[in-house]
Length: 184
Image 1 (cartoon, helix red, strand yellow):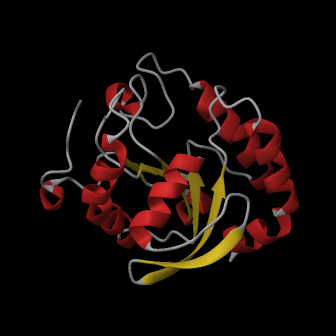
Image 2: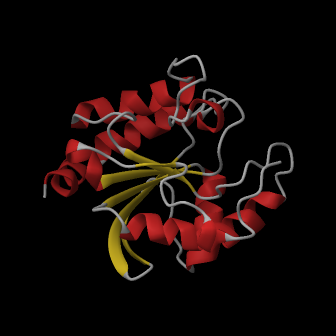
């Protein structure tokens, strides 16, 4: 395990925070924690150390391409900056301690839309923020001291057998609303 949550004020704002570019600067994808073979080793969200786009990144790009976006140009961060590996019970504790880091990352950018990746990430996000956001609903929410549009989706990992189809339905249903947010 790698813990960064003990001293959140000393954690560099740019670590595990890919800032968006172009219209991707308005969208922040929020995962749960750094993956074992993702950007902990590669330094780039959704990429392997060998520079290959990981399956989760490919699935995200399937959803984002229609909006002229991709994981390469959207903002990306993790709720917990710690690598918890098999110690899943640590995820909520680490996420709570890392919350100030997330708030600093939000404040340092022009995000309008937060896309929460996965049921567990949403559960923890709701717990820490005091919100009651739901999967598949585009909602306005106050996070820190700013209002964002927030969309929680099923985790795009291929391990989630139904996530791909359900996420495509969510993005198709919300296409007009999402376009308005991204283009404002």
